[in-house]
Image (cartoon, rainbow, N blue to C red):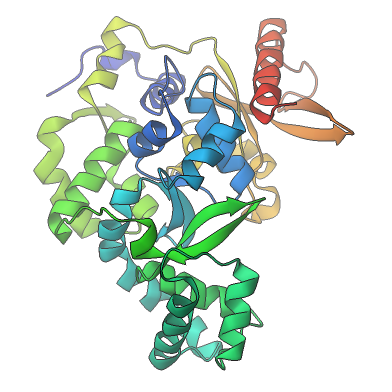
Length: 368
């Protein structure tokens, strides 16, 4: 199936289509759980940023709504791919880990040898952890690490966090309810009582389809990088699901998206004048291996200074990243300050007013 109006494709148009796919242009989602389930997985190593990423997609939501979804187990936070924390639907975690965990753990084998982590150590740590949290109990990370130490499993020098990561990737543990800005550790099967079962090929095909529907226009390479699944398997999955997608070509590259999103090319692509204050690590930027469609390469260092892996908050206008924003707190007051790439002219007056509305939305989300 092909989309009409292909001659209209441009970087801003592709960026705006991504906003629409991700629930950032239009009515959004009714709940945190619905937003996360649609997105399939949302980067979440920075908890505050992850909460706001969900909040931006759920109109009228507050931080307590997203935290509540985590506390009730409607959304879980774990390491399903790339060794990075993500938010995802609880019923998806087990089958995703079945696809990715072995490869993730093999990729860290050298580091595990440096830390002195053997298969026997993992088994001993797992038994210790389950003794601590089984039966519906929960433990802080500090309590878990203390239990490891008592069992003869050192936790210094990142050894503890690697043990925790392995046990989560093996489906023994998962992060559960929040205690302030930390998450308590719980037994996987106590916290997630219903899990879907998909074989590898079926799972990769569903994962790819859901990614392209929620992140498209995107490429097969974008998904291979995002998920950590080998490109050969991604291509086989694409062959199985491409009849449910639309292919468009821009500058010689094939992009895939849902028919509903592609139809916007005929009916009018939204968000031409929208301005969004997105968190650092938002899927709009991080969900792709090639970010140049929405972020001019000359400004990439403004988003990730020195390539340090820490993504700053972004201002997105008309589907393109046009600057960053900062937050300062004085007492109970939260100031939201734009830092546009154009340091001479700044944001245009209409964009500045739209950004101020975004700042007010962010403060309401925080409850300040």
